Length: 218
Image (cartoon, rainbow, N blue to C red):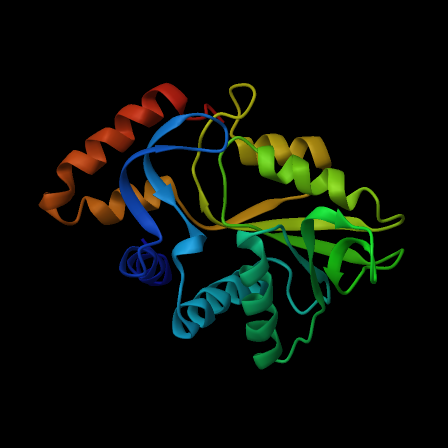
């Protein structure tokens, strides 16, 4: 495993973002581990997370200027921290996020921050994709922006789970909307990391059993 992947998984674990137990995903599935960006609570932690996203952005997109979109609520802090990290590395990009409910007073509207113009490209930054539900909600919101194209989505972890069919949710999103979905690590990186310590044997077994039922075939 590449050293940066191990560093990232350790960061997620130390920050309490990566948890093990019994959880229910947004898709309704019962899952044995959980990735929760909402557990990032300090300036140092969110700054580090932004740096990982910025690194992934430069690796996959390069120095191309896009507009970062952070879906409410967890995506908001990710978009802000990633924009700051990109700026520190010489790429100043705008960002915006959505309200859960459209505002009918003041400036109004559903979006807060920079509103992309026709011809501009948007990059969505999320925490995870399980069944693709959250991304489809984001695309429904972004469809209101005429002439704006989503170029890519970045997430922390590819859970390698089935979406609506046998393909992974990330692959289905890519097929459905025509843009790539990138992750810093995937669940098999997490398994490899956990297997380095025998005390994680039970969690490894539970994740493998879950993937045997819900894992994507492609």
